[in-house]
Image (cartoon, rainbow, N blue to C red):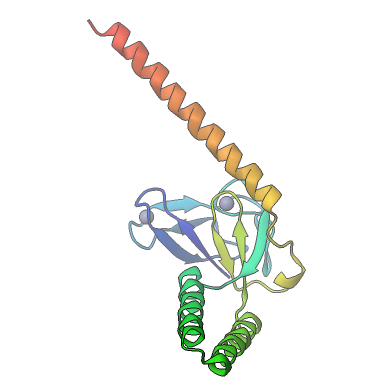
Length: 169
Ligand SMILES: [Zn+2]
Ligand SMILES: [Zn+2]
């Protein structure tokens, strides 16, 4: 199993192997040591996020979003060109081929388990098909929580600077 996570020391996405006995993992760029959440890892399984205190994870296709976007753009541009030049058969051939390509990629690409809160990604886990898929409701809940925390942090900082302004002559 391995985890890809955001290192808050160097602000980069790093990767590390994890198993039941893992207690800490180093960042491969800045060597900062990250402590694993207790009881997050079971043999061959990730029960909850090991990087942050979040207990909710979802399964998604391990598909690079940029590649997906490029494929869609090529499909749209090429089929619009053939459509513009009244090459009807070519247009349908392109659309058909891209549907087939999408389907093949979907079947071929594996799953990844992702944390709602810190977006850490876990790969190499058995039986991911039975885990919960992405829920917009849960995602929204974490997004709002994050926004509230950022807001609270911002106002705390403002209050602190106001206090220091008053105390300074
Ligand atoms: Zn780092
Ligand atoms: Zn997390």
